[in-house]
Image (cartoon, rainbow, N blue to C red):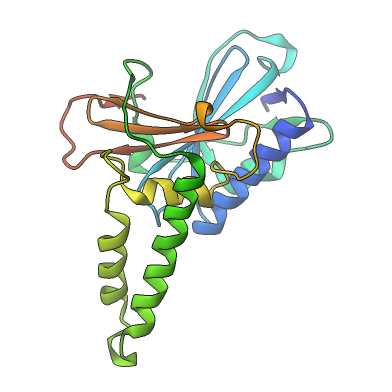
Length: 228
């Protein structure tokens, strides 16, 4: 079994927290792991948000025995979480699983360009808080007989599909960043570590703790990277 040596205990704890949050939204969640050298990217898709979450993990060395090879595999998030040893700062790669459709289509590796208009971190957190409060208020205003899944989904689509400020970024992407621990208050990263980027049909919200990628309506071929 391939053993990953993480940079430190904090890196292991953050990885475990990210996997736990993914499993909160989907108990059968899968993650795609891509590593080269001392960098590991963990891709996951929490179904509630319709976005792709990317957690970058620093490695102390490439792999067990120092093998300098690339890693690209889709595994169970739950099985991967069980192998994370925070005190030892290690994680083992479990047996691969048949990946869900999203795992075959990932954001491009390069070609990202800065996008203007992203509000400051505090404003983004306030935006999410206001959106959650609006959802709850509108839900409570509904008569009991109208509180159906279809009705609630419609309210959710109306709120979470709105764009952030003058950008094309949907509010659901910021909500995902907040819910997955990427948009933390009181962090040392600051506004300068937060950014919005585009590449073809993709948008990426970058934070010091991870990224949220969302593809614009319509699959198309522009900017789509199919990695097998």
